[in-house]
Length: 465
Image 1: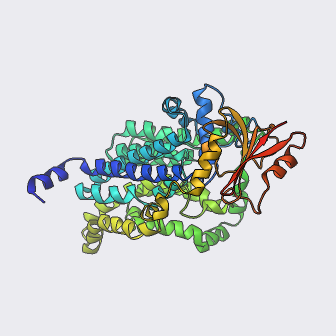
Image 2: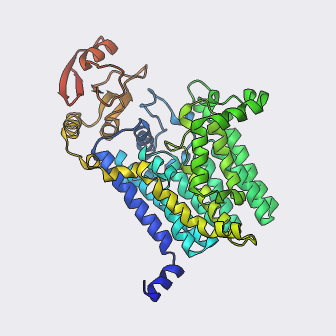
Image 3: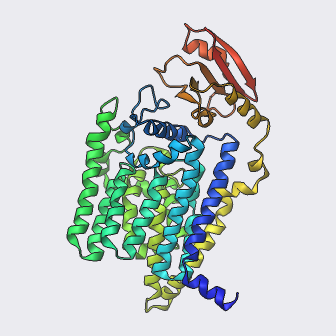
């Protein structure tokens, strides 16, 4: 490499730009192929689309996929999503949220790379920046489509970048915004408040941030969510029994330490950062999220899949960058070598596990097959649903339907009489094969139904009377 080019790459923020742009491009490509194949890992993208539809219409966030008249503010607390409304109003589609997520993940990668460069030098900016951009937690979140944490990741990354640059007031403002991303993040903000106080010596500033986090945590869980909930409660509170934990703390610790899924998440955090994160007190901010996940009784919270690890990633990788800097300054040669080589090993680990990560699907021919019989059948079915229709659907084609129809989840009770019923016997989540007309007739016996379309295991049933 010519000396001039090498010097330019070392003295600019090229690492952050590359990390941001390449990750945005990769996740946008992955999401676009998902969209063209009509893949729906869950009903979540449809839910968030209905939220933004309501915000764009200046209405309360009533999400019919969750239930007729269901106000999503009684489910999870994420008012930060309103910031996406102007873009969604111009491009009102579920696909817009997938595009936005790719961009938001790229912004997060940009600022993590900047923080790593500031902490541990230009090489670390490249190595840690790319390791984070294509890390397991980020890929897992992208693969399951849009969630509110996609907005939280760049806010957190910017806050961390400001924190390590010792811009205490700006960092406090950005980190304080996390309480509006999701209800559990108030505890993370509380820890960041303690870190700001400890690292800056500004106890009033840090204490204020900690108080802000803890107050919003309790107000959200005890006041806001129950107020909008149809059962006057926080629906997920039963997943965590603090009384049982306090009554048997050693038993709880033993269960966590012997649980394969929970320990796999811990292993992935430690291995992907080459243990460097344990040298930084920033790693303390990981604990609230790990605590609620590991104490939850819902198995899906435990492992390194879905979107639950996304908010851990900026913290872990910025902490690893700080750990690398501190260890590289050690007097002990082993620790010094560990700190120096650690960032390269982090990127090596990210590359080594890449074949098991979602983006590896881009190397498979089937991923690029977006015009097969199933995709063509799905397109035909969607074209038969008029704009503004009321549709009862399983999860399979919900993402495409929600752009044109008022969609209700087919398994919910209390749904209104729909114009159409959509069933996918291959990917809709049914335990046995379903006859669409019989199912519709059984749910709505006073109406008459006919099969309007049946192809590639998709069925469209229309109300005719």
